[in-house]
Length: 271
Ligand code: ZN
View 1 (cartoon, protein in one colour):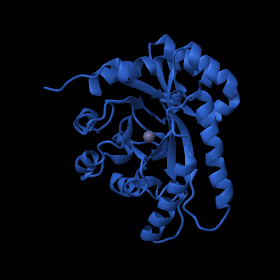
View 2 (cartoon, rainbow, N blue to C red):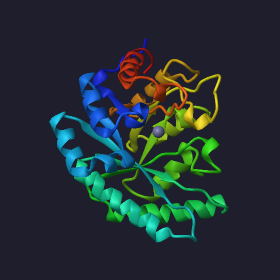
View 3 (cartoon, rainbow, N blue to C red):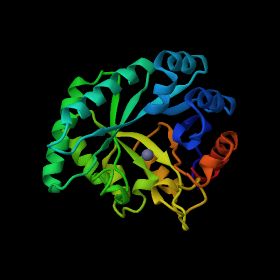
């Protein structure tokens, strides 16, 4: 027998309703009784921070995360401007009252994994020193399909190794990125106290086009989401369950109201 989770734990990552600008997303989620959102920086820039802050407050919306920033792995190139960009994101997050900042490691480059880990740990440490104390920094490992182009950080184990070196750093567990990993249950257990995000979607058996942009709605694929949620429960995670669906051929083409309704229905059945 598995315990069900309250819909109060449902958050929506606004990429799930990509056609909506941030103001429409805030109104739309509130209309369906959803009061937690992960905000994308480009959508925030379109609306502007003062207007966003007012609307988020008016609609009683929690900003569980601002996303994304990229922590450079390279030792050459313009590292300084990449780091400065993250400092700007600290200000944006503070301005709209975001609880966390979602960070990706990358883009990748040719470097030994040991060296990469050292560089990343150093930069994450430096960022942690500069981050407002109210802002939780969160690193998200991505699926190995992203290894060559977006991020070479591909397992929860490696993300936790970084957390071991940077006190206060948290991790996000995304079922699309991590469900393939046979060691996931054990790593989630190891992550206790550092679990700062849980992202859900589904892995379709028949993917069309670019696999990175063809995530399924919960229940349409082969991930046992509830089982992973129970591992999160056991490790003491009690925060939001965030629907994050990149779907250029399906859900992004539908009426976002229908998408939100479906998220809520599937959340009850599969999360
Ligand atoms: Zn995610």
